[in-house]
Every structure is written in C-alpha cells, then in structure tokens.
Length: 131
Image (cartoon, rainbow, N blue to C red; front, side):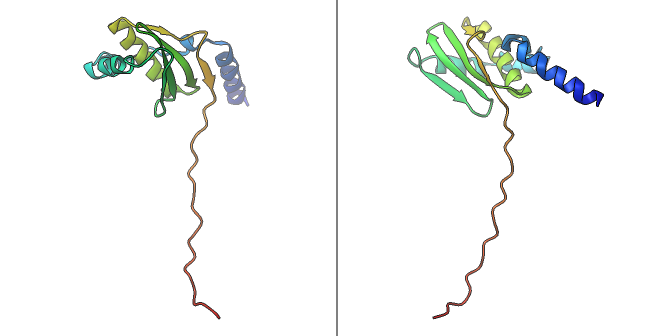
C-alpha cells in the first residue's frame, strides 16, 4: 500500500515538473558520448534542413524541429527515463556546438506505451480438398 502511494506521488510530481526539470544528471560515459564527434556531426547534419522541418527519433522517443540555423526545439518527448536521458545528452551536445535547445514550454510529454509482444495465431495446414 505504501509503495502504491509513493508511485502515485511520483506520478503527480512528474505532472507538475517541466521537461527540463526531469532531465537526469549524466554520468561520465554519457557525457563522453554526448560530446563525441559522431553526435555533434549528427546534429549539425540534421540542422542542415529548412526552418520548420522536424524529425522523429523513434528509437529515442523524441521529436525535434529546426527553428532556425542556431535554434533546435523539442516538440515531443515520451514520458520514460530513456528519452529524458537521451534529451539530456542532446542538450549537452547542443551546448558544445553552440545551438540553442528550446525545451520548455514547447515540449509536449506523450505517455509511454510499452510495445506488447504480439503472438501470431497458429497457421493451420491446409487439409485435403473435398469436392
């Protein structure tokens, strides 16, 4: 009973926190990855699109939009620890390469919906044809 109340309190607190407040502190490994040449070049390549264009990072649960050549906006973030962690790394990468990352009040938090394993129905072998 106490655990359920604690979980409900955590959910209520998350509803009142901004997205920026939900971002975790990165450990050394995550910081190194965020500041890698690969991440910096990825963001710079993505920023080569036109103003207003957006892209979804489906595997990370984030949608980003180019506002202008120096500004990137978070449009959506899935309410789960992984997207917040990835977003914290994106923020660090943006800071390093001189991009302004707009998070609040623009980011819309979308609910996390775990993918359920879909079990296919058994395939019935065709039987002899009856005329």
